[in-house]
Every structure is written in structure tokens, then in C-alpha cells.
Length: 227
Image (cartoon, rainbow, N blue to C red; front, side):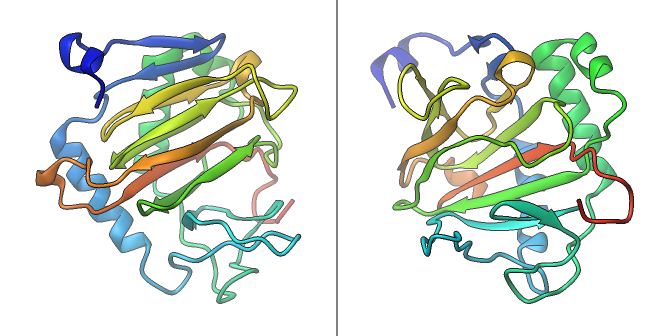
């Protein structure tokens, strides 16, 4: 934790047009309840899995999906790259959480602009102290509703870049347990990643070793069928 972070309260930060960081958005009680839900979702079938890329690589962050199952690089209704089970349902409470997050970060007008696409996807990534996430874009959805990112557990460096390249310019943001990051509008397809996790920095009372990131998205897909 930096000295500046100790001396000065963290406040709302506009990292790029349409990209906003809201520190401490989830209080301790909401963090605990969300963590318990993540533990339930991570159990098999259709539980936490290791993701393999088409080129033979392996993602170091493990993942479980709700609503639609993401695999490189598309969506399905079953865990096509795992145990083949139907994906777990996307709960209404997460849809409500996503709408609340977008309203708080970007304003009600941002939510109204994407009102035709309901939030129906959660990608939950678990990072241990050695896990990373390379620079990538969330571009497999069929609509441009803002992406909602919630952090639990260990602090990480979240690298938020530009829409053209995986390289500079980018901004490194420290995301701690309870933080919210939303990106939409001109930043919806910006490259982003996690180059570092600070092991052992989770709030002790949370009871989590590692970092969980919940990414909530609106797929915009026709009901009942994979895109």
C-alpha cells in the first residue's frame, strides 16, 4: 500500500472517458455475502476451472461463469471447455448490482442508453498471488453496455489501456477489496489486464486468501440460443 494511499482518502476517479473507479463501493457486509456466493458458484458441476487458450496457453487466473459460459473466444450455454455441464444461472441480484454500479459510476443516463440489453453474464476470476491477466478486450458480447468489475480479497494492479493497442498509453490503478471499476462508452473496448497481485493484502476479516474479480456484462444474445 502506497504512502499516498495512507495519507489521502481514495476518491472517485475518472481514469478515461467512460471509465470510472469507485473505491470502497462494497461495504464489509456486502463483500462477505458476495464471497460466500462466489464459493457456492465455484463448486462443481460447472465450477471453477482452468482456461486454456487456442494457442496452447493456460490462463493463470481460474474462472467460473454464470448465465453464459465464456471460453476463448465466444459464449455457450454449457461448459464446452470443461465438464460439459449447463452453465449456472445468472442471479437477479447480480443484475441489480450491475445496474446500481453503472448508475453510481456513470449516471442514470448510461444505464438508459443500454437499457435494451439486460445484464446476464458473470465471469468470476480467482487469482492467487502468482496469477496475472494479460492485456485483452471484452469484445465477445453483442452489445456495448458498460462492463462492471468488482474486487474482493487481495489488492491488485489493474492496467487500463486504450482501444487501439495492448501497449501504452495505459493507466495503472490499484484495486482493493470492495472497489468498483466500470467502463463503457468510448472506453468499452479498451485493452485492460492485471499485471500484479499483492498477496496477503486481503482484509483479514473477509477470510479470503487470494483475489476474486467479478465481471458483469450484458451479452445481448437472442434468448435460449448460443451466439
